[in-house]
Amino acid sequence: MIPSPSQSALDPAGTGADSIASLFWVMVVGGILIWLIVVGLAIYAILVPGRHDQKTTRLLVIGGGAVFPTIVLTALLTYGLAMLPELQRPAPEGSQVIEVAGVRWWWRVVYRLPNGTKVETANEIHLPVNEPVEFKLTSEDVIHAFWIPALGGKVDMMPGRENRLKLVPNRVGTYRGVCAEYCGEAHTQMAFDVIVESREDYDAWLSRLKKPVVQGSEAASEGRQIFEAAGCGACHAIRGTSADGVVGPELTHFGSRRSIGASVLPNNSDNLIRWIAETHQVKPGVEMPAFETLSPDELRALSLYLGDLK
Ligand code: CUA
Image (cartoon, rainbow, N blue to C red; front, side, top):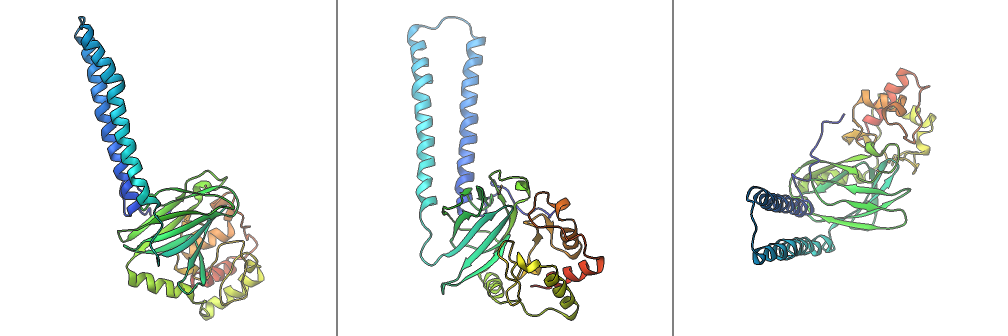
């Protein structure tokens, strides 16, 4: 398993998650207080027998049964509703727009560049710290849900519809995003990595992402031939090569990603070999066929080629 990056909604590192965590704590503390009052009154009624006069009884029934809940529920509703405009306000002009599509069981990630062009990656999202970002979320098959618990709220991804999510990450770090809507066999293995970094690191990453791959080392070129011969390019794209498939995750800078298979395994050579040869043991239900016929040497060369794509 991947050494787990932060995935806690109670340790917020973004504006949306801040509001949700505050709301959660207000509800928990408020709920405990009300529980204590109700249980306290119940215990009082049991331990102190005797009749109360009619006036006290009426006061308790009207006050405790109607006035008190009305005040508490109105206060909570007002507090919750007051957060909505901030969460729903569109991201400011010039914010980074990132289109993410849920696909059984991985994430297509497309960065819209200021000049209007797009650049695609998969299963990993980089964000500049303290800058607003807007996600445009959709699905290519069934309903998924996009959720980075530490950064913001959860939003459904529906086929044929575009939902939006705005957030401002405010702490550098690596966070885990997950699919939060049951979508089939590999639902629990549909996660992604979110890397919040300084503006400089983000710019450096984005400019690397834009470039097609540079031809790998001599050793990797054997792996490239195997990649082509095995037909991997029918599903996967590697910009700068003949591989231009769109069915599976884009692999142009695969070697720089943290994980394999939508955050299922840490990205290293041994895991990649396992992924290619035993795909269905690693992630039951995955659409990619296992390439069991490749020899250990071929698998090693292939993993070298893919690991070299940085
Ligand atoms: Cu996608 Cu659950």
